[in-house]
Amino acid sequence: MTGPVEKPRLSDAEMLARFQNSKKRPACSDTLGMHLAEVHQDEMRVVVEFTANESFANPTGAIQGGFIAAMLDEAISTNIIIASNVTMTAPTLEMKVSYLAPLFVGKATVEAKILKFGKTVCFSEARCLTPDGKLVATATATAAPKPFKRF
Image (cartoon, rainbow, N blue to C red; front, side, top):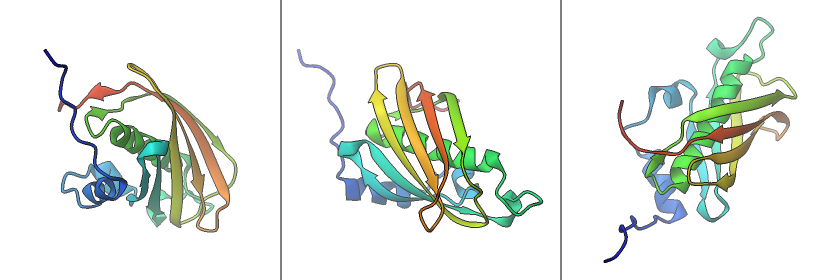
């Protein structure tokens, strides 16, 4: 008797195209202006671009921290989904965000990397950068990979 048959793994380019062309994007991804820019499956790393619009800004013109946290969380979750070969979702158990500089209306880039992908827990980190590469915020997160199912 043989074990379960795993889905064939897509190349990085195929996985990127799958996400970029998906018709099932969550509304939260669209709200954040999310665009998956790079997939590096062997490194368990992704680069995600976001567009912070004026509705995200506080009275000083800086993007409110909750939106930055959502960008970090979205990139981390997407990375876990990709690392599982799109077989798992990744509910976040906890996330710590450190804010280092303001982010303003416009583009932001988040680089997310998995540090350890266990059977029941996944540890990740992410960095949010301005278009000119200035570090805005960092996050560390713990997620609980679960098989995909709709609630």
